Image 1 (cartoon, one colour):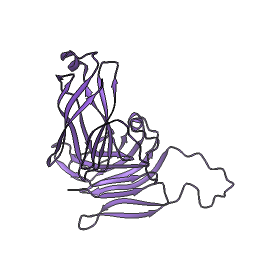
Image 2 (spheres, rainbow, N blue to C red):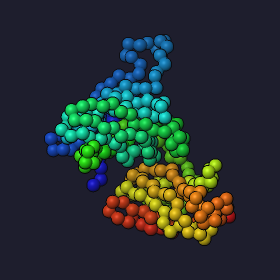
Image 3 (cartoon, one colour):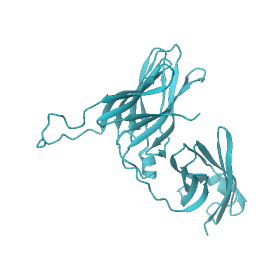
Image 4 (cartoon, one colour):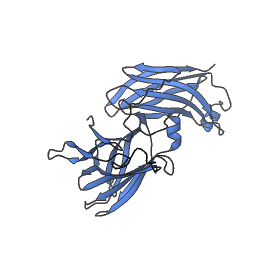
Length: 296
């Protein structure tokens, strides 16, 4: 089922906050008037105070099934990078765990750290932590928007309680500029595009072929690599890239040093990499596309 979007517009004159559900279970948007950073009584000659990087928000993102998630603050410069603080409340009779899924910043897929357990009848404060290195990899200097869904399950049985609809949090209401990506196009079909950018060899001998994925399909897609060979030798790289519809991802096809050593490829220059891009979702295979990267 295609998820609906809840818009949460923050740090602006008007906020849109997904706040619970209507009686028929449909999500509703609630407009809340807030004040801009300059107080209404301040004059143009007053010197504005330097703002903290942490913004207090205190808006409800989810309130259903006896479980509430409140977005309490956002910090652009958290311990590892940008940080979203949540307060969770569990009024059910079961211990629960809350995680995040399908997360993106400014339209680029991310993999933050967040898993918070809340006992029955209890509350808990937690932080969704993003890595600054992931933002740098995607050329993101300022967080403008964040999209995510909440995955909630019983801690003891691991049974799913709910997967929320997509929650969109707008930090800075600006239009994103499209960034040009150069490289070899490996796949360009039905709105799905995969581009090979460059190769990186780290100090441990691991080889990474960096790729950029744009998902213009109307469904989520996972891209994996099958039937791969390097210079004619079969090898199994690490590659599984999840991209939501309308989103982008910078990722890699990774070759581990011990696999390269086993095939006699350790320290050997890559000349030709051949493989099949296997694209699928929960409903099955979307497409299988052969690809070749010539590095001579």
